[in-house]
Image (cartoon, rainbow, N blue to C red; front, side, top):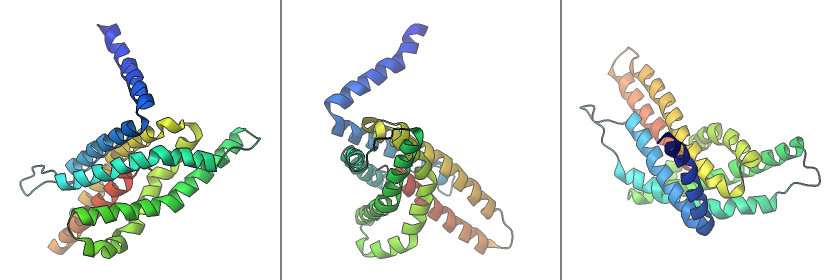
Length: 228
């Protein structure tokens, strides 16, 4: 029994590799959708409740994140391969050379690709919420904050991605990071919001704290779900 349990993860991993090899694009889409659903439920559970303290999931938001992340999974299937073709190691294959290449790829990803992907995410978000006229305001309020928050997670994560993770496994790896990042950042945001809500000097401070909490929740969830 113990041996069977010990072998279960290996069998599961081998099964995943088999499916990935036969249907790489579909597997990465499914992986990304699953990660978005799990990550957003974690973030909502840690940040949202009604007046009675009961958890009420925002399924529309989760569906939007899943749709976007599924598209990013398909994009990542081609994107990582294209990035590898565009930026290659030269004749030197030392650790320093590989590190410099990882820095270049991370720069391209986070400085050039991340803002565009974030803009596309907010376009999908306001469209799904039937308020497309507010797209410009959404960007003005959240684009810079979301990208900057994302850098805290994705810059170190992608340095590891481009140094050590094979191209075919990068979508899986970034989705795992996204779920873990959702948990860590949501905890940090939740702790900060509780500290603000406990401040004295009237209800206006608590109202402001509640608004800041909602804004932080949205920004943190948005920055970690993008896994290009």
